[in-house]
Amino acid sequence: MADRQPGNAFIWRLQNNRRPSSAQAVGLMALSISGGILLLLTGITMTATVLAIILFSPFLFITSPIWVPFAALTFFVVAGFLSMFGFGVVAVAALAWVYRYYRGFNPPGSDRIDYARSRIADTATHVKDYAREYGGYLQTKVKDAAPGA
Image 1: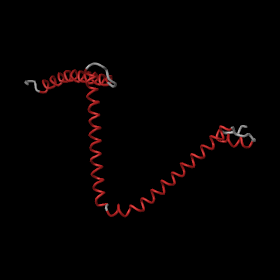
Image 2: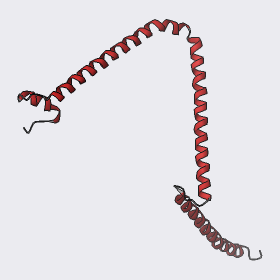
Image 3: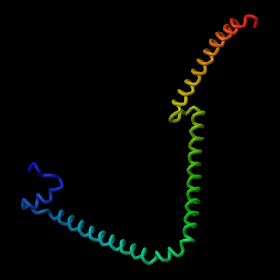
Image 4: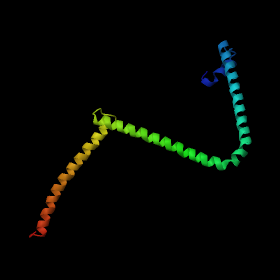
């Protein structure tokens, strides 16, 4: 019993002469019938695909000077429209975020903007104070170097 695994439950029942219930038998029969139908449809699809490739490849090869530029043009037009749509969505989302931020609704990420703004203001204040302090030091050095200046 220790080596019994979930995948081996059906085999274990068959080995121990337990007959599956009628519901299990009907389910197994439905599963096998639907699997067979899907396998048949897969075979028909693959056969049709191979035959289509065999029959239409000379036509595609002969008309490829028409199809290749058409495909390239179609690709670039579709890519242009999709990128334009994507950029438009991003612009509308950004404008909506900025509107909510300035109206005070605190959109997601506004705390980071506020933190960055305070850090920039603090750094600017420190630089200004340092420049005043260091600028005064330089003025005294200039007076020492050139007493008449």
